[in-house]
Amino acid sequence: MAHVLVIPYPAPGHLFPILDLCNQLALRGLTLTILVTPKNLPLLKPLLSLHPSTEALVLPFPSHPDIPPGIENMQELPLSFIPSILSALSKLHDPVLKWFQSHTSPPIAMITDSFFTPWTHPLACRIGIRNVVFSPLNAHGTLGLWNALENGLKACENFVVENRAIDKVSWGVICNTFNELEEEKLDHIKRKVLGHDRVWALGPFLPIGNDPLTASKKCGGSSILERDIFAWLDSCRVDNSVVYIGFGSQITLTRHQMNAIADALESSGVRFVWSVKDPMKGVNNMDEYGVIPDGFEDRVAGRGLVIKGWAPQQAILQHRAVGSYLTHCGCNSAIEGLLAGVLLLTWPMQADHFDNTKLLVDQLGVAVRVCEGLKTVPDSVNLAKVLAESVNNVAQHERTAQAMKLGKLALSASKPGGSSHTALDEFVKKLSN
Image (cartoon, rainbow, N blue to C red; front, side, top):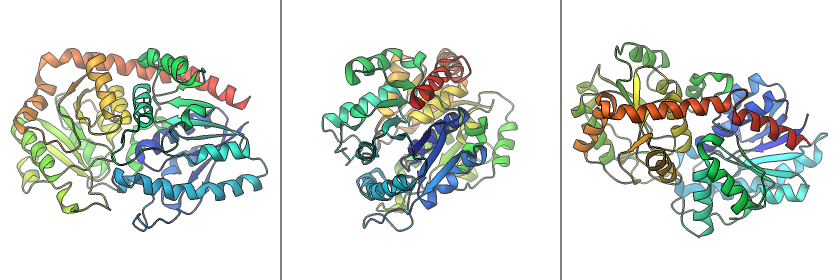
């Protein structure tokens, strides 16, 4: 079968969806080589253990004066470091070219990150193979970021992609969405933006091995063992009574934001699981981020869990006890919430979060907008009310029912006979030919 080189962008929100895509491609017989640097290699372990035909191409992370030593993943850095990461990764061009030229059976195509691997398209052109770009976002978010970059906006804080047209001249585009959710937007991209039909909606991507707990093994340790988290959730007698709070791999809350959430949780009386990200390296005043208020955990003991570090988010959301999810509304987190059928409480902060919120709140009516802005501090009284209503108020049942309906559509799309499953088969066939 065809050999494909996969070049991810080393950030959890980009890396894990493309690895889940690789799982689906390997199941369909493709031979894959995935480019990683040494510290990211362990993240490939579940995939490599399942598919002997999939290999890792491990190259040293190129040094850069602005990147702290030992860091090879954006999970540990704020978005202001994106230009430095891209500058460093672009130095992989020549080593990859050398690897390709010496390979006995080189790839016939590349799958690369849509936004943050601009150096890969010139490489594909030089060696004469197809380049397919992978967007970890849905169609709304993908188009929104394309438009922002083309208009010269600072879509990711201080970062503007220099090669804005890379996606449009690539052979094809993969979006992390499904046809039933965004058929009109996908059609617009094909007809009005790209001028061809090589756009594939292949999501949502189910966990490697179909085990949601694999998510907990992906990035770092946790302050609470998985068995203890789920023992606590099992002890909750009322279904849909727990609020889960998590803001993804790239968001670290300020001390004031942490205080507002803690006050709201304490006064609302809800049961909760709160995933708190450790402060990032490379930022000033690290002690002002991710700080849990003194005495908070003691005051809510028995009613809530605070998980410091990496949380098994997907498995938590799918537990019967969880009813709502306070989220930044990144594409992957939003999809996980929908698949779990919980009510999404959105706090969009940057990048595609705002497009996702507009889609889910304003157009589909399956979520509730709570707050917005990276530095915004929510009113703790209002937030407490929203949290309590999300698991207690029958007025929210209609939104929850709609979210569950949409989640079932998403799951059906990924199963045999579904739109994404069928599109994956067609993509592999077209790529191989």
